[in-house]
Amino acid sequence: MNYQLSTNKTKHMTIKTHPPLTVLYSTHQTTIQQLNQFVGTVMKDLYAEATSNTIVSGPVYWIYYGMDGKQETLFTLEIALPIQGPYQSSKFSVKELPPFKTVAHIHEGAWEQLHTTYDQMMQHIEANKIPIKDECRELYLNIDFQTPQNNITEVQVGIF
Image (cartoon, rainbow, N blue to C red; front, side, top):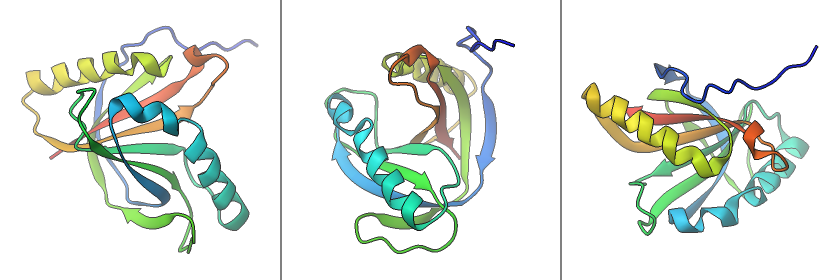
């Protein structure tokens, strides 16, 4: 049986509370223009550390603090990998992320088009007068560097 990704790139948005989780992570000060330097590289290092010392319990997260969508704005990026149990790392930090209430939306396709998903989400949020936090997350559910249209990313905008 052949399976294909849905071509519907405008799936409905949901409001949910993501449970707390422990993550192995690294922190970076960056801009949207500089994000490409982190694609694949930090993730490989996090996986190498985690798989040899603990259990990976979820997909890679990119967590943005203070990102406003402008190319030149400096913001904080945490690249995080969920892990099981307490863990000490000499290379990365470990913390528990608190519960996270969010408007979530699935983006299918190349990351270069993520801005369209964010635009749709912000229109929905503004139309419904939902107050937002300065934190957004991207959960990389399927990563395909060879065929980017196969990427599946859950975009989460933090809300109160």
